[in-house]
Image (tube, rainbow, N blue to C red):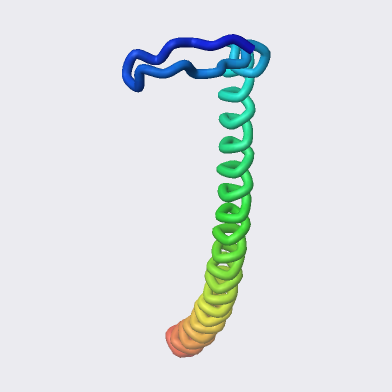
Length: 94
């Protein structure tokens, strides 16, 4: 520890060289940056899970509607084919 004279307060300030060197300040900056990055990463993972859950419901709904529409289209095509067969049979009977 040594004393440093502070011009603003006209008083001496005690400073410990071991705890506030450039390297210790750099290390604390890196540690705080790491903590902040981990917190942001955790928030992003939670957000991603929520989006994935919502997308899953949308995908299932879309698939359900597609199956229903496909079934309706196939039944309509079969009905049209049956109607065409009746018309063709009437043409060839003469």
